[in-house]
Amino acid sequence: MKGVIYTETTVFAPPEQFAADAPYQLVIVTLEDGKRVTARIAGDRVTIGDAVVLAETRDTIPFFKKA
Amino acid sequence: MIGIGKTAFGAFADRDLRSLAVEAGWAALADANVTPSQVEAFYLGNFAGPSFVGQNHLAPYIAGAMGVEHVPCTRFEAACASSGSAFFHAWSAVAAGVYDLVLVGGVEKMTSQTTPKVTEILAGAGDMAGEGRAGATFPALFAMIARRHMHQYGTTREQLASVAVKNHANGAKNPQAHMRKVITLEQALKGKPIADPLTVYDCSLVSDGAAAVLLCPMDRAHEFTRKPVWVRGIAQTSDHVALDEKEDITTFRAVSEAAQKAYKMAGVTAKDIQFAELHDCFTIAEIVATEDLGFVEKGSGGAYAESGCTSLTGERPINTSGGLKSKGHPVGATGVAQICDVALQLRGEAGERQIARHELGLTQNLGGSGATAVVTVLGVA
Image (cartoon, rainbow over all chains, first blue to last red; front, side, top):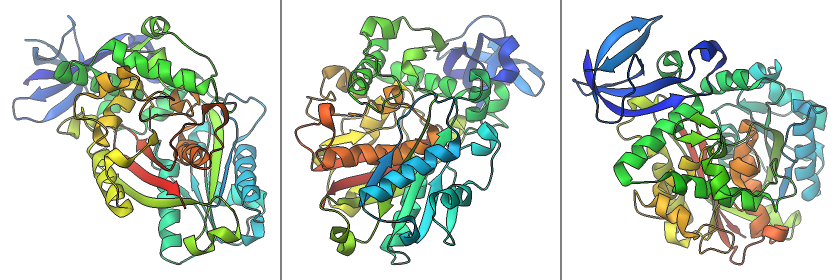
């Protein structure tokens, strides 16, 4: 699955269940079919417009990385 | 609207949800010289009482303690627009002739939980199967809106921070505000990061508090008060809950549609609105709201915020109460509290923060990341 970063943020104040992950980068990716998905980033930080691919799915959470 | 009442907003370890709601309700009734037994229905806005304090069935629970008995009592939940929604439905019932005297309340008791727990409960106003699953918090959703707005329109960190500086300056003049503290632009910019680019100064407060108003038909208003406030236009609209399902996240479609409907009902345009209480849950939200309400062109809300036009002495003061940022944001109370604050200005009773032109004001109450919007145009009757 491929797409482009539509928007992003880095979360420093997480909800209780993600306390161990913080800080983590959260993004909305525009996929090739035009649909959007809210996901996390694995590896290098990304900015708006970056091309990304699905790296893995952990506990049903999609993680994308730079293409 | 013949009566208004509000508790102070803050962190009150010794107050429970019901006592806050009762205080606000009794204040609104006293303001109109109406007794609890005269109330024909009670509409309550509350987002997450069951999660925050473990109490359900809140509307009759509060009404009974106020002495409002044996009448319809119903709770409305629409995230941070819960009491805006309760107000809209109460107004609809009075306008339809179902009741004459209707009490509308809003309440939230948030500070008995830890910040991570509050963050988790608030996240439930989003799509827990999608964005919530991925780790989105409300600050994160609005941070992503801010990022996109900065990307598309060149909005700056300083423009975001200017909203916080202005609202804190106003809140410092409000004896009922949660955080009566003036802040500088530099402080706001250097605040602790919450969700990049938003710092703690871009985020509204976690508060306890309640607000209430009393409604009656226009032709009976002068039986109760010399200063009735006229609900000239009102609309509630909705949109997708998940941010990633919206075509353009730099605008709240529900807000612009509610505004157009409310303006039409009131027979006014955006330029007629002299002042407003806007839903500044995050600084970017006030900027986007000024665009969606038609106060300025799309994309120029940041420059407008920075220009001084929205300060107490500006051409269109916004959030003279201090807004959610400084007055506080007990989420279920906010919609009705905004209406109380506009009413105070219309009645000329806003004290140190009273503005010069105060005949036509507006409230904009937002639920979640724009899934519910209520816009109300209020004038002197």
